[in-house]
Image (cartoon, rainbow, N blue to C red):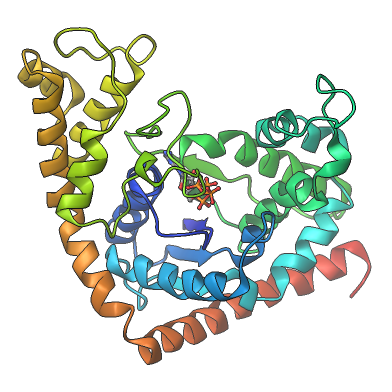
Length: 346
Ligand code: AQP
């Protein structure tokens, strides 16, 4: 039996990176699942608080994100779709796990290091100053581990940028298993979860192909949203940063912008990258961008239209969230009862 779990932050509308790097797998895993498999997909509201959020906008984004999960084709009758912040076990387990996690493990996370790199001491610009950063930015990978372990997930479909966090989850699980091993216990308490990758893995920013496409990057032209219209998609792709080299080649190191466009085209048209490169070899950059825009529009049209319909159906969305939270809550409570016994706080 597989237990699949993944989550997304309600920090805006998902972009092509979220979709091609992770969410397409959510739907694929649902469609290819066996009846005994469990699938859980969650909107991780607690994680959004690591950065300042406007409460009204967060409330809207949270509902919109649930609508997006349905719009991409997930079936709430098959998968448990829920808001993480409506199930109590996540923060409880995160606290227990954080008491087992050495701070050194968290300081090694590249997400923390890159936050730190942007935080300079006011008196000495060459010194990074961690006293300026909130503790949640350091500890949220433990909350992520709790999200996964609370349901004893075995498979986690996430983007390539989450590989280090998933390894941390395995390390924390292993540490817990060894610390609280019972004398006659046959199997480790928490399974060590496996990452499930998409062929695309990582989509880069259209404006700065040295960084990943991101919901919270300031330039909205750096990302294509699942809700963008055909003209918006065209405009964003037309202004995508490429290079001044003639012709089209796939060379992620020296030509990250062009290679990113080829990756997007290959994923949207479900055509192997070699075939795409061969077909587009003699294109000009503008022609490639037009073809990418058409392929993206073709792929997002259906989810976009479904999202626009669903987001108005507040009653239905609330019902899905309520049922999801109940089902997830039962599973979470079972784990928490066992965990409380294991640690001596039953
Ligand atoms: N550019 C990307 N390429 C491939 N996969 C990506 N993911 C995110 N960006 C890319 C994957 O999408 C899933 C959901 O991401 P998230 O919302 O939980 O947080 P994130 O990774 O921090 O994504 P964003 O878009 O950059 O959000 P913000 O700006 O709010 O931090 C994850 O599986 C992630 O790997």
